[in-house]
Length: 333
Image (cartoon, rainbow, N blue to C red; front, side):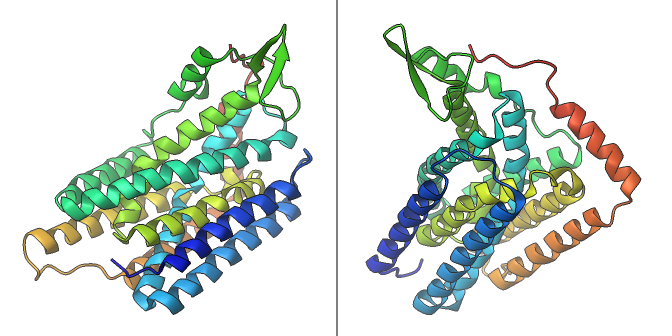
């Protein structure tokens, strides 16, 4: 655990609030976000995350800075899976491209809140019950198995618990009304499908937290490090989606790379738990080594994906497109 000064928490909170406010003002009018705009925003978010990492290095030291960078890159790589689910949800609800940023904006706010709760609880549990690291490792190994066997659990946006609960609380109409979440019909307020999409996005993030939280806790058990790294990775998720939305299907080996990373983190968790509970002689994997492994695996998986023969890529693209295509509009009531 690091001795984090209160002012650093204030700087972090102010950075997040100001960044979200600027982002909201910059996208207050509905429009389709193209590659150049998304790339510029993505570069801004990455630069902001790295700049904050530099502050962590200077204030808390090299160990904290390395853990922050490793956790941020790990969360960034795992969040790529979220992008595929975003595409599935938008296709399911047939969300106009001009409204997608607004949905993801509120999805990010919800993710920041829920991840904070889960990570704080996870840190408290790990610090009190070290043996839970073995359970976290088992969760990651099971995720690796599902990825490698192609048995990653399917996600039905229309049947997610969040969407079903929303329908019980408030009526949901079948048609959009611009970027509005509620409209008044016959003297009553009813939700638009856009609110159901936000609920589906939040439900998806809760599912992905099952892998993300144990993985990041293998890098650090400090609340400040794990939350700030997660927050900056989540903040840049919207821009990354719009930048890569047309290229997602071309990263064919990325899922395998993520499986390797999760397996490596699982081994790291086991070694940590064994070192603390069984014998100090059992070596732990240093954070710089973890960072190097994540960078190398990501670089190799992306490079192999881009070098894949065009005919195989096109065949896979066609299969993915067929899987996402809906024959008719989905109703949310």
